[in-house]
Image (cartoon, rainbow, N blue to C red):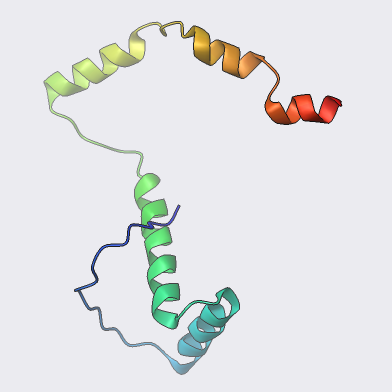
Amino acid sequence: MPTTVRAPKTRRLNFRISDAQEELLRRGANATGQSVTEFIVESACAVAESELAMQSEFKLPPDQWRAFLAALDKPPVSNQALRRLLTEPSVIELANRK
């Protein structure tokens, strides 16, 4: 999911692209109703977030790793509210029955 936080924009990135890449980016921005800058930033941030989310390796100090494994090994805590939420018909399901 793209980042939507509206922080002051004080940083600048400069890069070179081919004519074909520029045309593609302009067409993409136009199709979405965004400026080229908005389109590029939103697209690049979405790809970056996706790549970072896909990282499956992380490192922890030995004591934190043991605590992490212990937490994974613990049996789940019963949560009646969650159980009810997942087993009762949703508002949409109830509306469709009428």
